[in-house]
Length: 518
Image 1 (cartoon, helix red, strand yellow):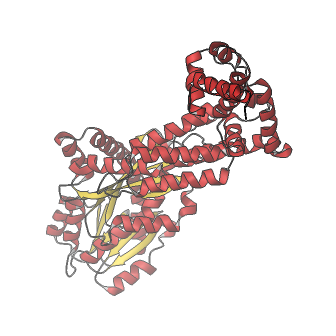
Image 2: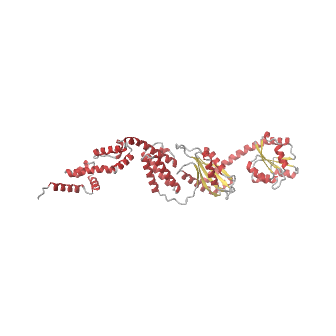
Image 3: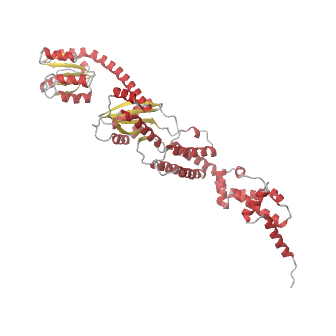
């Protein structure tokens, strides 16, 4: 069906167009009527007709003035028929100048109008076909110009884009970049072709009619939209966009949209692109999907790298304890604080690398390393690691973690003279080394190595009191291959050197053995 707009200042003529012509049987739809040229212009912008049928003499803006605006100013490619009660040649000459398709004299003859409509059907179909090809070529050229503007900028790129997009230095510009956020399984991002329809739907709902939009593919998997606003839309575009995104969240699905600020002129597009990508970087800190507006950062934030590292260590402790809920909350808190305080993306990625590196080292999982870095995937990895740790600890809890440590202590009392390490002992009792070390310290009050040294030095004191063994022999007997190291450990735990301890205890023993006289 072809859309038709009829323009005439005589009410009975408009009524005749509505009732005397069988539009549908000829393949047309009467999409509207207007009583003068100004009213017609508003209707043309609203319904975009294929055919305009207009009278000549009308108030405000006559038919020839309307045709001139359509052809010369708006450069619209549509069919135009003049219907007039004036057969003057001067009117016909002007109509030929504007390439009017037909000039029909009043009064209306139904059969003549039907023949005219059927005659115009072929040219209208050809016009649609050529217009679609031209529109496709223009869209592709505009997309290329926008991408060149994003990547390179420069006066030449700006001039080329201005010519293709119909913009100037006063045009207000905004930029959207969209992609499909990774799914729950950390899957591959969608193609730009599947993202673009949803981005277009959001733009249609949230961007005013006074704005023009140009779609492009920014990168594999990412679609872009350049918004050109002449300022007549009133309310800020990002506010309207946020309201639309909130009401159509279900339709957008896992779409993540990053919105820049706004600025005047196409020369500002590279900066707008930087803003959109900065919004993208910060969006990775939390839930990825949804609309993410650029917010200018006043300062670098007071969140130092040392504090990020401390938070990462606290998170790792929760994972080691097998606390998935606590680990999830810890990730959320860390990422929310980073986003709130405007931490640099490099700091965030450093913390992420630290956490992920530790997770892979402690709980190696071949699937973890393939997941792309986002706040969602980091949380998923941490919770998954904590769950694995909790499952590994179930046998320990079933037999009592205290009994496992008690058995380890009994084993140490028998084997402390040997070279023994926490990792080996944990494996012997089928315990996670980190968890075993924590439980050991919790129940004994000492870390593993200090406890072993305590057993050895206590035995050393006995040997020093009861035997005449050399220091080097005592050290070797207790598993110390360096006599000086043994001496240092002895002094650290007793406050005196082994030789002093031996001499002192020997003197005490002699005093006890000496006879006493009344």
